[in-house]
Image 1 (cartoon, rainbow, N blue to C red):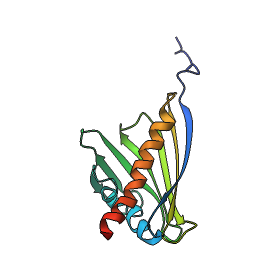
Image 2 (cartoon, one colour):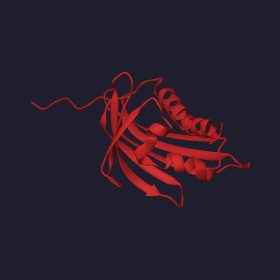
Image 3 (cartoon, rainbow, N blue to C red):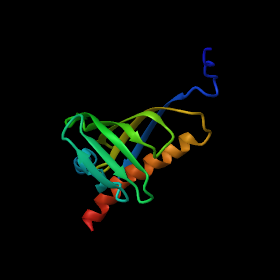
Image 4 (cartoon, rainbow, N blue to C red):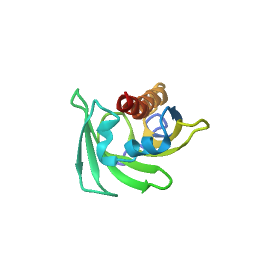
Amino acid sequence: MKPDAPTQEQAPTMLLLRIAHEIAAPADRAWDIAGDFERVDRWIPEVKCTVEGRGIGARRTLTYPDGRWVCERFDRFEPVAMLIGYSIVGGGVMPLQDLRVVLQLRQGHRDGVTVVDCVATARAQEHPALPQIISGFAARALGGIEQLRIRAST
């Protein structure tokens, strides 16, 4: 007996999320924070970050105060382009599969402003609020870069 083929309701949907987030910090300072795969806890302070390995292929585990955790693999690093990429390889903070994230920083239109371009792809079961959930999470995380810069300058 063959298993039933997945219905459209059961099949995961491919998601593509693009966010451009402006922060009040010079691009080089923001890159020092966002480009450091091993220290994501600097800009998402509520997480505990542990790292295994170094460079491309390294893995970091982020543990949240409520005990949830996620393991991410360092996939891409282009410092001249201020670009970093990683993928989720374990854990369950969000109802997503095959989540891949690329962050690229660039100088904004005004001095002292950086634009963080975030592109994320993932597979997920259909959920009407999922884009808003992911967007909110990303905006909070990216805002942490700016908050760190503000705390460091006061």
